[in-house]
View (spheres, rainbow, N blue to C red):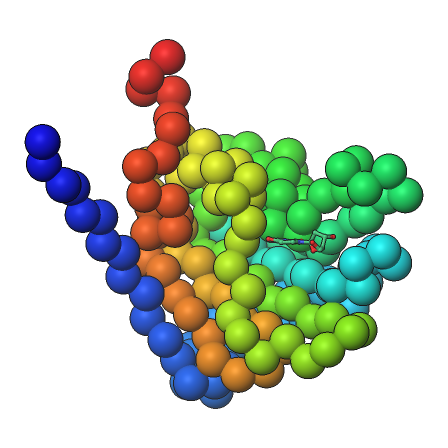
Length: 160
Ligand code: THU
């Protein structure tokens, strides 16, 4: 019997101002997208912006539904929006921001498990890591250098 420990690394930035102008622009786009989220049920609005290797920026926001499971997260709306328009390109960066009409979101909001799994498919296929930055409405920003840092022990098509 042996225990296997898996570690992961995140970088914390104290605020948006500590990030590059490029990433700040992505957050600006994600905030614009977040404001257009359709989230009448949870009142939790999420925006995501993706930078492609051709410098295109593609955004997404969460879209809810009266039949709750039929809604979709901002990250998957964004990644499918990106790959549906630019299937030949690769994603270099993704930023995520969230706010709530119920309370101030001060903690960094990471992508949910299903979004991580979805992102893993594309990161593996494109053979280059996706840098992911996430925050709440205000406060610290977390960064990972690859989706792998958020999804250790991932299930992928190498086992099929
Ligand atoms: N949501 C996202 O858009 N991304 C996540 O990673 C977590 C949750 C959305 C789904 C739903 O519309 C609302 O936030 C509350 O769960």
